[in-house]
Length: 317
Image (cartoon, rainbow, N blue to C red):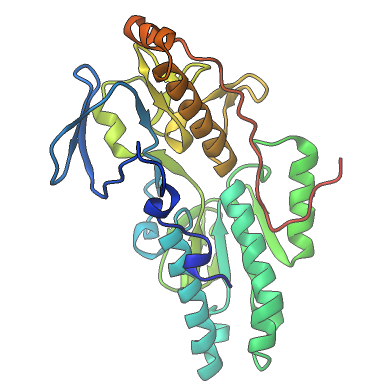
């Protein structure tokens, strides 16, 4: 398993040599879109010509009993580190006390059949059947279950049918049990109860079932889509504020190809961030761009294409 330093990088390191960039580590307290000011904790307010809202998203448990207290979200680097330490701790505990295996200490339930849940279930299964099987040969591998629970009829519902079928087959080949049409009703430290009444013994519930936009967006007076996401135009600007872009998980980027908003994936965030940076930079580095800014910016459309990075091999064409 990778150390955190292998996948996380300091923002300050990334902008070395860029004299026009300043990095401040603080919390945004408020944003006034009309006055073009950003209130910060412990700092003087900042004004802007262009604003890029990349506030990200936060996990939502949909009011599921016990989920907030006992589930392990899987959206940030700290979340991943916490999950890694938790899983290793369960295997170490079972190695000392094998009776914990019968209590579900090695079992993992992953909630959510979207990209986060599918990728997490596949990665955990590969970890279980690979490294941990070698590290703990005395523990019964066939009793260490990885279960993916999805409330809809299929996993990967935001992708085409062939990818849905392929993902399910690939997960099952890795010994992941895929349960569709099931919803988690309640969570305790050692049990997960499904809406059907079925109970699964597990000490680990990975939550990949839902995100909502950062709660700060509720104070901006903007039109919000499902999941507290900011509605944006084809150029990623916010209605009524052509100098404001919304990108990544907090943006509801419509795509007619899927008859809805693009999924909250890293690839979409990267492409939308690059588009906003290119558009705003182009508008500030030329005299015509400055005049356009004074009139109201008209940026070019963004064409983000969702891609999923997964431990599963590439699907056949």
